[in-house]
Each structure stands twice: as structure tokens, then as C-alpha cells.
Image (tube, rainbow, N blue to C red; front, side):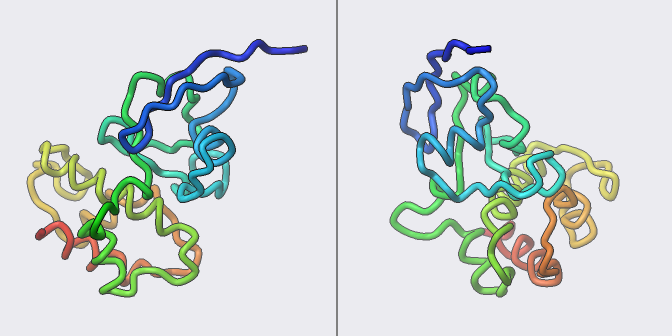
Length: 167
């Protein structure tokens, strides 16, 4: 069965891209295969590891689960969109705290951490801090629990996130 492509406009890192995509194409596949932005990684392809995390309108999403057609009209920010002339404070904090080992999950971890800080600023509650207003190590662990690191760099990721949150 042949599926007719859909005209889709994805705005990624501030640039609009008009594409003709199979309606079953995920944001992750559109980014990697059509726009050649390889920062978001294909880990589990089931939304369980967080390696594919990007921001859609400032909120964290697993790009492997989101159809590109559903993201049309929104603003997608990938890891490539955070560093312009200088590194984003979260990127710098990950370097300063050696919060990576193999680096495969790092783009998703950073995107998730940046999105999490927006949620905290907006007062979103968590299981650890139901008031949503505070951010401490247990809260970071809880809020980042959707992002897995197979190398086990968590001990350095949490301090990196907390440092960047101060900036």
C-alpha cells in the first residue's frame, strides 16, 4: 500500500523547513533523516530512554513517539539549537561537571534538563516537591527519570543541572 506524502512545515531551531513526508514519519526521523540533525539519538525507539528528547514549544517531548505532522506549526528545539556563539549554560555545566561518559544520551539529557527548568519556573509540581517551586537533588532525579544513562553518569548530571539552574 502506497501512502501519499503530506506537506509539512517543521520549524526547527528557528528555521522553517517545508517537506513532503510520509504521514507516519516521527519527529526524530524527520530530524535525523531529512534535516540531517543528528543530535537527537534513536535509543529505544519506544519513548523509554529519553535519548531522543527535544523541546516542542519549550516542553520536553520524546521525538521518537511524536509524528512530524503533529509537530507542524510548533517550534522544535534540538541540542544543535542551544549553542550559538557561546555554549548554553546547561551545556557548559555538563562539561564542567564531567556529566557524560560515552555521550550518547547527553543531547537528550541536556534538552530534558533545559525543559525541566522551564517546568520548574512555571511551578509544575513533582512527586518530590508537590509545590513545584523548589529544585533540589531528589527533585532533579525525579524530574529527569525519563532520561536514562547506560554509563551511569547520574552522579555528575544532577550537580550539573543544579549549577545551571542557578544561572
